[in-house]
Length: 164
Image (cartoon, rainbow, N blue to C red):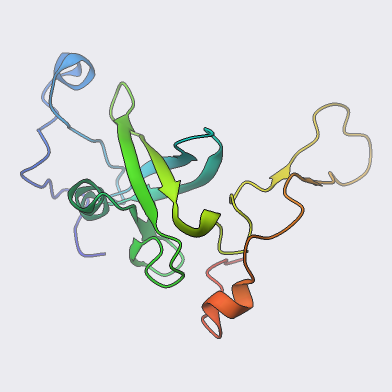
């Protein structure tokens, strides 16, 4: 990672009081000890959750500056401009921060209609049934039946970022 957890870019206000963080007019994001802040990304039109990731200070600043989503890839251990490889860029329509400024919400428009490297529109393409569990393993339900693109064509021989 290019920055350390203690580093605070000049563009972010210091976190001097609860009142300033919760009621003040300045962005004072709280990154965890590893330098990450969680981010939920949704489709700006439908509200559908597309993905969940993390940002570093640099990723958040680049997102603000460029209007396109940047994240920290935990699997690749590097700054990740969403769509740089796949062409599935996320144009940021709105950035929101929660009350204590320790989580980010991006509302985006997705180029080419997909956000998930597996080929589905959303990274949240399966649902978990609610109710009695019984003695069997939980079976997921596919909410998206067809992929928007074929990952083998888009990514070729690039390694899959999913880690076990």
